[in-house]
Amino acid sequence: MTADRSLRLTRGATVWLTGLSGAGKSTVAGAVATLVAGESTGAEVEVLDGDEIRRTISSDLGFSREDRDKQGQRVGFIAELLSRHRVLTLVPVIAPYSETRAAVRAHHAERGSAFFEVYVSTPLQECARRDPKGLYARAAAGEVKGLTGVDDVYEDPETPDLRIDTTAGSPETAADRILEMLHEAGVVEYVDDTANSENPVVS
Ligand SMILES: Nc1ncnc2c1ncn2[C@@H]1O[C@H](COP(=O)(O)OS(=O)(=O)O)[C@@H](OP(=O)(O)O)[C@H]1O
Ligand SMILES: Nc1ncnc2c1ncn2[C@@H]1O[C@H](COP(=O)(O)OP(=O)(O)O)[C@@H](O)[C@H]1O
Image 1 (tube, rainbow, N blue to C red):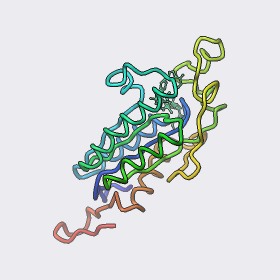
Image 2: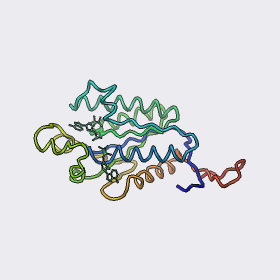
Image 3: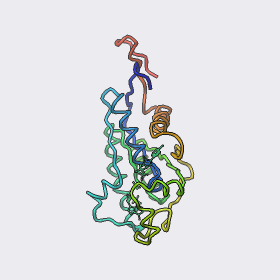
Image 4: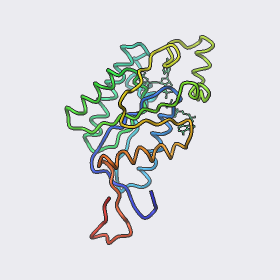
């Protein structure tokens, strides 16, 4: 993205960032939101973070299979509503089950809303090395049970729209790849700000 072009959304979309704790889902979602907010012409962007949702409307949920599925369905419902109303909705939520992710995709498709699955595929070893919340250390000490990827299941997405391993590269590079995906899908377009404002060049 250069300073002489701006970004605009042609429609809303949900971008679901799935992956292990510490993979970089929230950091990359934040980087996309910052880029879009800073370089767009009035585009709306929201982040629905799993931790934040769990502190509010999902404070009744734990980490059983049933509860994780409910969390996915709830967040998917809100994301679809937002994206149908032209918001670029970034969802850094683990969503460990293929079935939940497929149901959320189908929910979007039934309503004509765009949905993209981004697999933040940073390996467990790197996630545990980063351990930004100390969860892996607590799991190793036996203080946390059922941590995704350690002693609870994570079903790898088989056909994600995009796969990003954040072991190498910056969050901004990862964010650029997501914007490129959205550009290719026609959700994002760029307007050449140096062109005649009555005859803008859009790509
Ligand atoms: N047992 C266990 N497994 C996974 N994650 C745990 C667990 N306990 C607490 N946490 C914290 O909860 C965050 C994940 O919430 P999500 O709603 O994204 O997870 S899920 O989709 O319902 O599986 C997760 O956030 P991220 O680290 O951002 O992924 C953790 O902060
Ligand atoms: N390229 C990168 N992309 C995203 N996060 C990165 C990257 N390199 C290092 N990190 C670090 O990894 C950690 C990822 O944490 P977070 O974004 O909360 O992950 P998640 O939301 O998947 O649990 C952060 O401490 C972040 O600074």
